[in-house]
Image 1 (tube, rainbow, N blue to C red):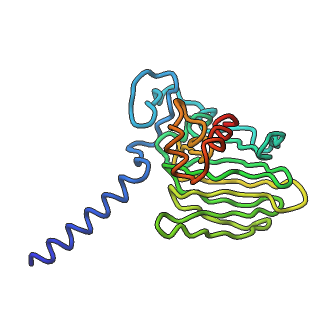
Image 2 (tube, rainbow, N blue to C red):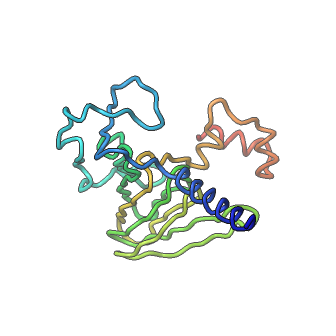
Image 3 (cartoon, rainbow, N blue to C red):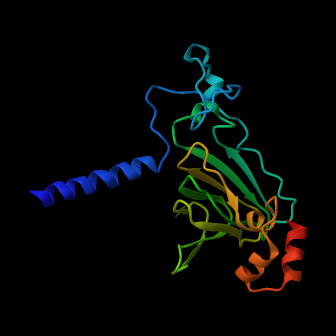
Length: 216
């Protein structure tokens, strides 16, 4: 009997941890974000439902090509709760990514979301790295119509390996997935991470670290 109590307690604890790890489920039909509210909550406060309009649930612009004239050769057009208030509490968001030839979406993580990517045009090399100590690199080249998933929190990237521009649509399991671009976070933080820490972490000399700080 004690074993069954322990077992069901363990299952319940696991189920609760899964629920807590994702965005909260809505407790009403909708909770359109009130971006002007000064109330601090885990997410965004709701607008008065009586003032909600169709525009709160729509976004225009994903048909427009992003500007990839930048050092990494890619452009991200997000549709999160900040662009589409009706996403508040729904646990989903969307992104369009454009890639110039050889352009990359550099290694990054989403701390609050898993990601599923669909290639609309071109060819993309995609990959993610599993957690330590394995650090296994899982990678694949995707063609038009192919789909790939990046598990929540893992470092991942995309690179255009085709001869022309590439386009992808990404769905994420959070209204506000967040993004941590690895290079920018490590070498562009304010205030900076101490050089001696980075020298030991990356096994390079101080001159390399100073250079990387200068470009981020």
